[in-house]
Length: 525
Image 1: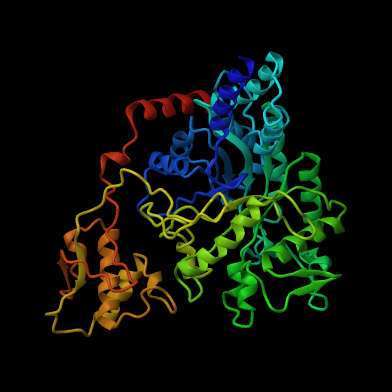
Image 2: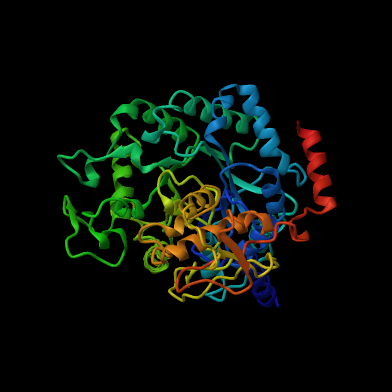
């Protein structure tokens, strides 16, 4: 009888822990889009696909409210433009109250991180696989873990706070060098003072340009922190280590290819190369491992070679560059995810690595200063439709992910170049205007719509502006050069989109949810 009770209890426990993705796998949820999917729809999409961890780039109350009660672990963030403010400890404490403890109101219990599946499986293998009778006190032990995991409503389960986002990029010209460490210290100390510092850690998501190997010895074992920030980086990693916080790094093999035609193409993926890099007898067959281990060596050089490393961003874009397409993204993930599932790790750091994919949804309002590909990192399109088959469990059973539900669109109507337009002398100016105020990144060299003729380019630009303006009739005029049509004018791989309907009731938060946010805001301001 006890065994039978145990069996059904265990099934319940596994169901509570069940995840359709690689252990520890999360995803970045960016919201820089002109027409955002409803946060509740995104949260449901995450749950439908077994994604149980998400990394944000702010702590927007609407997003956080949608995540409340979902059981999804959350990494919230402080944008770079708020770092200077966080150097004031009182402001840092206020931020923690407003964005962390505000959502931890389930009986005032400290927000805790998830038990790893490995630990639960060890318990299962010891007791059930060996057909042992499980005593009541042992069941109480395991159920004491299961119940807090299931009883997540209505808190939002935070694990990390990202202090800034790649604040030491060379392109920032040192703008955040003097404020990042003080902000990090204040946020972690504020978390500690609030009583959540044992389970919620402050970290700084950094770009891989904070370390490198010398040109004279370009191998991972020679990795060191960048000379101009070496002292600062040492102080940061020492503080992180003191507080048991991870080093968070963003690694982008795609960027190794971007703008560098001499980079060995296959080295950006995981299915082998003919000429691996050999470093002290260790062969590196892909740039991800080499980059990660360059960081390991950099940490070792400052006496912290065993420090926990979290990969905050890794992914592959699907448009905006000749190497950014669904086939390459499929190849990249089809190599990365099985490695993560097998806990293969890297030569210098074998085993489990916590990873957040970048990103969840395409963002048509992101800056394209780094490149047109910046708006196309999502594993889902702008409307929550999956782009390609993928298996987030890493078992190679690739299939399309579950799309967002309940999404409504504007009418099936497009804007195109008027075939009867006589004077085309101002066509170029109007195309430039349309693209300035919409997203024409798919028209660039090597992109999905690069093959259009001049008339197709004009129609694409006009339609993107038309959809950006929610199909306002006046937005499809362009000095008489444009007209609307109800016929889909997409061509080949070039999709002429119909935008999400932002006036849909699906976008409006419920009265109860809005009231709850207002009450919480009042209480914690």
